[in-house]
Length: 336
Image: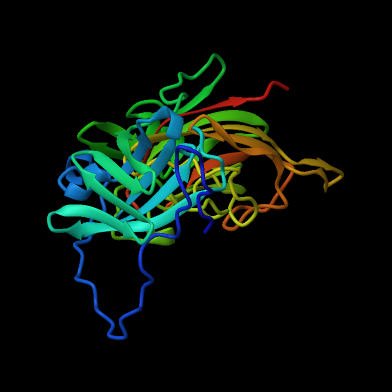
């Protein structure tokens, strides 16, 4: 991972966080961590780690730094410090330092030979050779969250009862509302369209990789836009914002678990003549208001999708057994 370059009056070079693992030849088994897997806000809030996870930004505007803190269960966290600010809000897209935080002496402490940090009362203090930076927690919201369906839209889920518009449709009742679950396809089918969808990832701190709030938003039941808790990860084609197996997102705009997030999509279906594909399907996608896929061409259907064909297709919300939820889903078919 790259180091921060020296900046006058700001950050000096920061090496990779923390001593290398495995220096002690005796392998120490970590304590067992209580498994948490919930979409219920009141249950997530019971875990003290939930209040610590999230995004932080420096209070000094002349020395803008962002940090993402990812809960890993049992009082442990992964940390990502970003030069310039948070993804989609100042980060230069290249310079970052990664490390960990863990409970020590009743406090959460980060350490490295060139860098120290401490979490306390909702703030992170980063101490480097030039001084100390204070980072405070922020809760970002997508600029399109709650966007109302425009005239001519097909509302696939706006309130309880709309689950009847889906084959296999089912709702999830939580303390803050009634939402759509996963594992269903829309009864209505679509060709070219624009769409809006909102989703909330479950809180699963002790799970890893594809086992962490895994789902997918399929266009025409053929092309998968991945849904996954990839908060703080590198942003790959099998993470949120990725087109599964084909395109990684331009930037990983995934918010922390339990924050409402949005996808806004412009989709053009593949074109066929005499049964032969003459133009690929295309899409432009915004994640939380930031463009992450720019007029991409689908190489073919994605894994788990139906074969490309000269016909409209359904919207699918993929099920992988994780308790994330959806709301405010609508599609505007293109005018013929």
